[in-house]
Image (cartoon, rainbow, N blue to C red; front, top):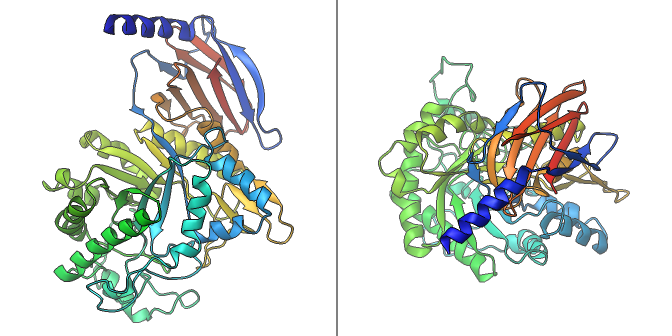
Amino acid sequence: MKTRLLLVLLILSYNVVKGQKFQWTSSTDVAIWNQTSIKLQKKSATEPSLTVNKNDSIVTFKAWGGTFNEKGWDALNMLPQQEQEIILKKLFAPDGDLRYTLGRFSMNANDYARDWYSCDEVPGDFQLKYFNIDRDKTSIIPFIKAAQKYNSELKFWISPWSPPSWMKINQYYSVVSNKEFNKLDPKLDYLLFEDVVDKNQSVFPHQVTVNDYFIQEPRYLQTYADYFSKYISAYKAEGIDIGMVMFQNESWSYTPYPGCAWTADGIIRFNAEYLAPTLKKDHPEVKVYLGTINTNRYDIIDKVLSDPRMPQTIQGVGFQWEGGQILPKLREKYPDYKYVQTESECGWGSFDWGAGEHTFNLINHYLGNGCEEYTFWNSILYDNGVSGWGWVQNSLIRVNSETKEVTYTPEYYAVKHYAKSIPAGSIIKSFKSGNVDKLPILVAFTPDYKYVVMVGNFSDELKKVSVKIEEKYLIIEVKAHSFNTFKAL
């Protein structure tokens, strides 16, 4: 039986590139989703930009995902029911455009909540007597339920932006004060760095906190671990199974909106001594990942991962924003962990073609460097995409609150180029970064034994590209500022 299966695979592999035609889908800002076909060539007059061999393999890709937040739910509900269903189908249906199979949401408020809340704002409630998910039932859970109608097999993971305010040293949901957007006493900003000055001003963030903003007393740490457990149980009772947690969103974003700064020692302590043991006892099916990592300070993340307790604590590592810069080096040193991308960069509310190119390039980077999941942040927002704390961001879909007009942004099409052609189970074979020449390339091999080639051209000129696929060549001329997908027929 094994011999027969091997023979079938060899025949399929041989036929993959023998006289193969590819469907070419191309998008520019003036012409979206144009399709034609192209044949592989036996020779190339130029050196290929990327070569793919039969046995190449970076990672097996598992999931595209999106985030559920209150502002997104508000945007969706501005539309007539029929339009809402069209959007949900495009995002979540197995035959939709983006085919999300993964959902992320935050425990307590994030920056795209309407305002601050947590599941227990009663100071000193170490028994969590007043814990509840009542606020979630007004928006987050209905949003998830609406998505589950189109994909009942959705998987979910969570992270908090801030613990309950009474569990923090500044007794407030944000890390820093901002007279326009919060009421934190500016004197408490001193807690972040005290009088320590980081001489390495070229590294983001310029300094890292000298204090854990989460109170490092055992009863606080254990209560917070129990809080995670109760949250998972509460969602399970609603028919929503959380399969993975990360202890904190962006420990190195010192924000005027919900956030919490942690030191490396605090991260190790909470995850290894409290969170992981509590979840292993209460919810052994739930995985603990380290994340979300948004700093490029390799020394800090290496300190956490090199602690001898971490292999028994975490199963994987999640990266976003500046954290992506140190992903390749960390994956090389720690190859046994799973790696995931946790939040696609949301920009500054431009909604333009350049934002789409940025997202296309990010996907190339994270998949090419071994991330098996990719989660987008704002799938839908309204008007200029402003948060409850004044930050304007991009989204894949944009709603005009006055006219109810729906716009599928350039980022939407950048994502569609990937998600519609690279399903779960695809092997990411090889990639070339576009950071220097603005020509990112990625090659995948789908579960139905077909090659997919992704090419972006973000330069101002038509570019000739050659990709060697085993013994043949895909030779194309790609338009300036274009997204391109080549899928074997």
